[in-house]
Image (cartoon, rainbow, N blue to C red; front, side, top):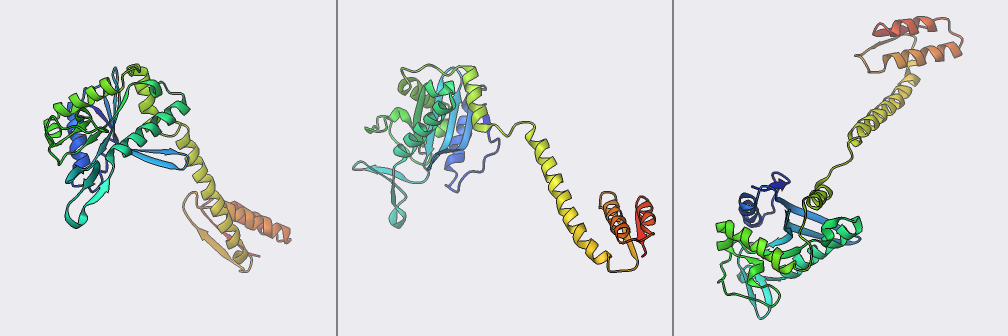
Amino acid sequence: MARTYPEHPAFPEDGGAEQTVWEALRDHLPDDAVLLAGTALQDGPKEREIDLLVVWPGLGVAAIEVKGGHVTRTDGQWWQGSGAGRHPLNPVRQVQDAKHTLLALLRRQGLAAALTRTAHLVALPHTYLPGDWDAPELPRTMLLDRADVADGGSAVHLVRRAIDEHGAGHAPLDEPAAEALVEWLTGGFPSQAETLAVAAEYEDHLDRLTREQAHAMRFLDAVPRVHVVGGAGTGKTWLALEHAHRRARAGSASCSCATRAAWRGTWSGRP
């Protein structure tokens, strides 16, 4: 069973098409293979998404476009749906563009996977096609139909064959290159990022408290007696010290009492 990223993908509302193909590949790919769902790619203004991406150490990479429902090809045009909901589409162009975008990004990153065997396939998990079906832009060996997906093993066989045949001339994907590719596609922030984020959040929290407390001090100056109660870390000491400083600047002799009392958890100030 392949490793999957994410472990439990959120699949689109496509009648279960993408999930069906994902499950078939997940269950039949070798243990060292990686299956990614919904890989988003951004290359300048260009946005692309690979429905399913297979990273197969020792072999190569396969990008798969999944189209559910009733799919046909007539007079060179692909169609999805029927009746009033029938609309044209081009799954081959979609997956080709996504694959080329991925390779361009890999080259820019200097990753070895940019030079590995790479293929694209189209999966139609709700459509049956004969074994001898063929199209100029999509040979049968690059298409997974309902029977292939239901078998699982047949789908994996076609993925392997597509990488071997259509990635010819390039090197197989070795294990270090595969791991570097997966790390780039799935990696999170650096390990210290969480600590820095927590520190920044705490700093902003203190800054906000300080501003709120400074605002409160303007009201404390106007009353003859103050009693402040609060748990640890709520800013009692800051208020007491600031209150004492203000009283001292105003010439009050009671500022030290306010400061001492602050450390006991409550304090009162009297002019």
